[in-house]
Amino acid sequence: MAIKKKRYALVIDSRKCINCKACAVACKAENEVPVGNFRNWINEDRQGEYPKLRIDFEPEQCHHCEHPSCVRVCPTGASWQRKDGIVLVNDDECIGCRYCMIACPYDARYFHEASGTVHKCTLCSHRIDKGTIPACVETCPSKVRVFGDLEDPASRVHELLATRRYRVKEPQTGNGPQLYYLL
Amino acid sequence: MHEFNWGLLIVVYLFLGGLSAGLFFAAGLANYLEVDGQPAYPRIARMGALLAPWPVAIGSALLILDLGNWYRFYKLFMHFRWESPMSIGSWLLTLFTLIAFVYGFAWLPEDWRQKLFSKVPPTWKQVHRLNVDLSGHRKTLAMIGFPFAIGVGIYTGVLLGAVSARPFWNTNLVAQMFLFSALSSGAAALLLAMVLDPKNPIETHETKFLITLDIVFIVLELFIILPYLIHGTLSVLAVKQALWLILGGPYTVVFWVFFLGLGLLTPLGIEVYELAPSLLKGHAFHGSRNLALAASGLVLFGGFLLRYLFVYAGQVSSFHKMGMLH
Image (cartoon, rainbow over all chains, first blue to last red; front, side, top):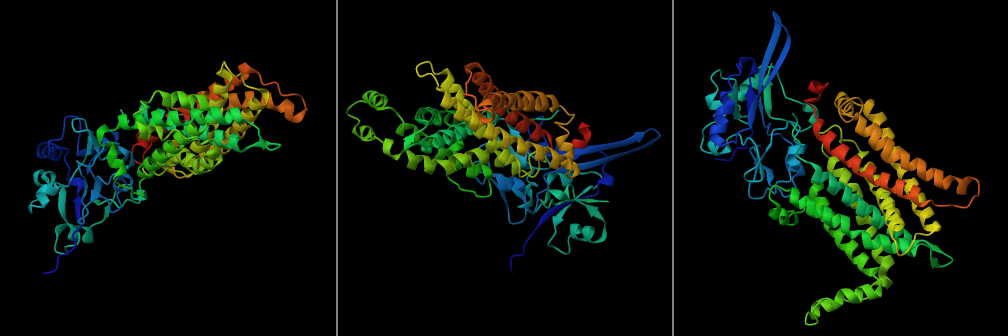
């Protein structure tokens, strides 16, 4: 049995998002995120005035880019990318220079005051490695988030991206972000 | 409210690192210039060589203090990551500081050197072996140091410019801007130090040399800042919006009045006023002490402000939040 290449990604159907913030809470509980910091959050976009008005909610977190600038600028190699595409910070190697925070076009990282290192969304790699799904995906009541392996033709993410129109945020950064927002 | 990851410590470091690069460059240059086979500016060369290592050493200490885990700074030297400007910079900085100290040592007057080593216990034989006269190798050391000085001067700009996420920085002009600003800061700091030295009053030809050097660097810096503004306003939306920070946004007054007006054009005006009569009309160069003090002080102030502006405004600029700021 040959080892198959994996490429994890999130497909986000943001039209289903009701801004309940369960994802943010689940993440904080799962990953012990300090008060005031977030590994994921929900962008609100309001337009117009009542009664002609629209409001959009869009969850966002680390985009686990194909070409992550954070990994490129890290002077010690603490920021690194797994073969399955997940971008992580090795806490023991991080010196806390915060260059990666400055280099991230999505501002997806935060400085952990207690440890003096930079933290971020890990796509719950500790859960994925056990065969489960990220906490934010598991908890989402309106099924906004779909987690899966882009390399697996049988996966739901593969199907969604093949059959639906989608966009990624700030493609001009050249980072190749892997959060796909369905239109 | 925008959070700044890099603050005043980084600004001060960028300034001090550039200052050392500029001091080394000006001192090395003075070391090479000769008139009738005699060194033309030996006192400038000495002053610059003795001053050069200190700002960068202090600046590097500030860098380490700014780290989340300062005691892990050694990890910077366990890796060489050519894609990371900070990794390249750490090595450059360390090598340059070492070379600058050796170069300064080579310029130490004989009696200072003996005094220095007389403080070392005589049993420390290995340390006393370092008590050598390097004065014959000054030119070689300067030659070795030049690329490192230029490297440190330019890398402070590359560190910011290489970040594609910040449109305010991400242009190929920031590196040169920082380099010329660093070189002019170095010339100005030398002028300031020479004017303020009570024991050996500065001589007219020395003032003239440093002022000329400073004019050249300031003009070069202006020739970088102008295209930076013009190209930026003609660039894509993200860059236009980023430039709004200094063209109407929160940093406008700091940029135009304090940096460009007070820190660049005013000292340039003073220096041109000093130099022009001797160049154009054949008058003797006077070299007013007060004008030299004012010009060099303002250049240093401007050099600091440039880095302050870039570090802070650059962090505010981004691809996705700029629309909200307007």
